[in-house]
Amino acid sequence: EQQTRIAGEIIRDIAAEREKGLVYGSAVRLRGLTRRSELNGKHGFVRGIGRSNSRYYIDVGTSRLLVSRANFEVVRNADADSMQSPAY
Image (cartoon, rainbow, N blue to C red; front, side):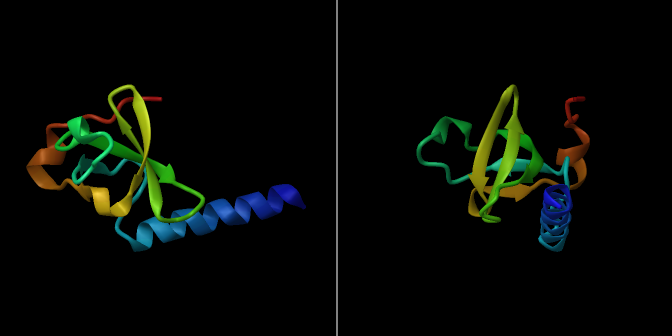
């Protein structure tokens, strides 16, 4: 029963991400960070949505950050083509 509940939560999280135009592996650029301002302008990849549904797990280099949706933009076209998502 618990596994069914968890699976349902994961499916809802994925659907919420897709509705916002975000999917696992989407290329993004960080912006507007105050505590870690040195990361503004850095590129990363979406790795999931946090439990609050307002923050996303973003991999930047070897770090995984939990970032508010207001602090990154999806990178499209040529910007995304020049980036490669690390294999896990």
